[in-house]
Image (cartoon, rainbow, N blue to C red; front, side, top):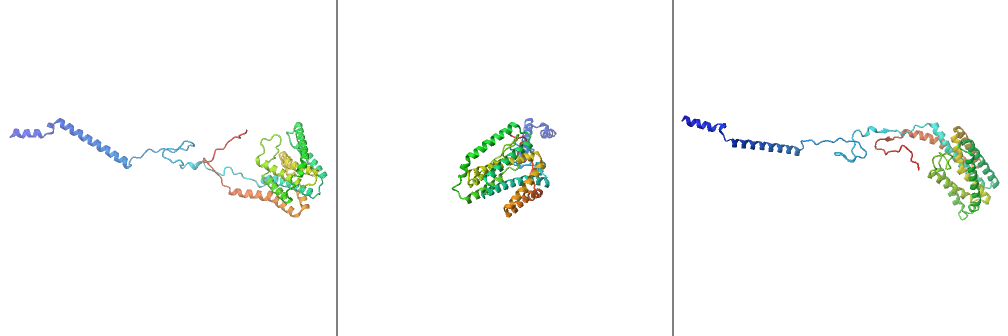
Length: 344
């Protein structure tokens, strides 16, 4: 009995189990554990427990779309470079009024031209008076150029004189054509078109310079100033076509073209030479113009005075006041600007 009990105990002890069966059981348990771990990882990835890698947004101009961000995405640093009212110029009332004198000056020049046209159409000025006026204006213009222009040489002066002689000869030859150019058009249509062309001339005129550039000028006249000059010339042709004689037509055309072509050049040279002389000349011109307009018609005098006050006082004050409401923002969204001039 004792031997049988000892044998049973040996069989039940773990040290006496089959080795192959034991290794197979351990391998089976390891595989099961590995499969269970992989399943847990897959479930976690499916359920979204693991967070993906986040890319940092960079501000680039032409980098294309960045992964994880929209094409128009901006972060909190986008408005750090914003600048408000960087280009707003603080203006002085007196300085703006001085700059507006040039506009009033040219308004008076055009008013004087209209006065000469009116007196010529009324036969108050004959052809001899007009020719004397033309010679006086031409001589005074050349004298001002000689006194104010530093780069004017003798050769350039002779060049100007030669061009003026050719110009005058061409006008005298074309005077009969101008006289009969608008014979089939009614006078009312001529007056209406002339007024419209003068308004267009004033609206498009280059008040900062001259269509005929001074010697040494770098910039060429722009398109609007050329249109303005052409409008004034056509208006002069319409007025000249209503005059009775060929000499009248030649004299009035020469006067008009001298004023519209060379008066801006002369006033530009005066302003560049001395600002005080420019102001003195402008106020004297305004006084002369107002005197002649007052003698012609009281209502026109009131209109001209109101226009001068509006240009010299109201508009500068208006410009200063509206500067308070100007709001300009600049930042990285602005277009690139060239820091140099492109010349042909």
